[in-house]
Length: 285
Ligand code: FES
Image 1 (tube, rainbow, N blue to C red):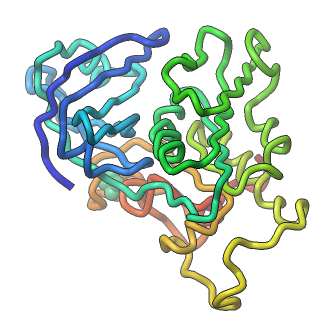
Image 2: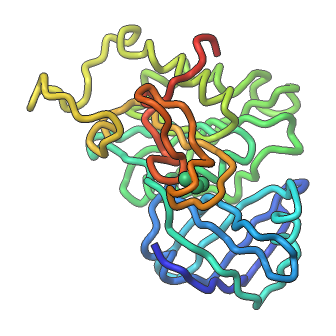
């Protein structure tokens, strides 16, 4: 984790109320992994005290550029959207635990709802770089909210579902999961809580439904990896990136806690990425 001065080099609106900003921040670009986030201090003149957390959308060590994708939802993000090119932002990061891909996984299914694309976007880059096949399922309200395909790597299969049927499948994105669960070795998701809860519910029955063996069970069979450990997450079929309001973002205030199966867990420290089985989802989703 570092405190860096990130220079804004490009800012553009890519969807109504959604911005993609590029920052020159070599320390972040070379030290970040998909799923991690930065905590950004808004300018003194904004009158805002708390930093704002943003998923690292992409990170390119070669150019030193990291990008953030966000929606203007309040004073902090409205301030962000007005920052001018050449200005420096104070960023703390990378923070949180990243997605963990099993080295034996060749087919990755990425599922995003709305702004959740920012949470999984970098994983697509990492997976393509590592020679994996990637399918992204993306859900939006309507065609005007669909993430532009030209901002994704060419190698990715991009499948869209819209609530009103104006583009792609006329369904919730979660309802596409059964079509891909046999193909996917692992799935990674980011989006609204109900979406994640539904995916967790669908994924929970996958092993029995598909009759598939657990990855990596032959060696060390019977020795369970501790819940929340990197090894356990790496073996999970579904990992979710949780979105939560944050205060400190370093584990001190407990303001970002969600209920896990073994008690409260902090999204900023134990997450934002969790194996789906770590979270105590509602009984019906
Ligand atoms: S935001 Fe303070 S503990 Fe997570």
